[in-house]
Length: 71
Image (tube, rainbow, N blue to C red):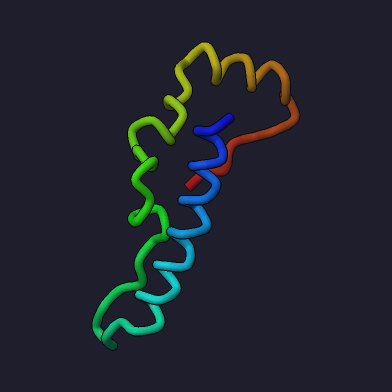
């Protein structure tokens, strides 16, 4: 519970820091993502694993009416 509270507090603090940075950045600088300021953020843990062939087959059976978009 304490960790969740800490994460929530850092999420708010990161958003405020990013707003301050983005408001004062130079014209050529890119906007910064708030999660860059957050010490809890780990991009490797945040992303779910990519779907494997079993997941894709399950979705094909669950939604047979969907046809993929052809390029």
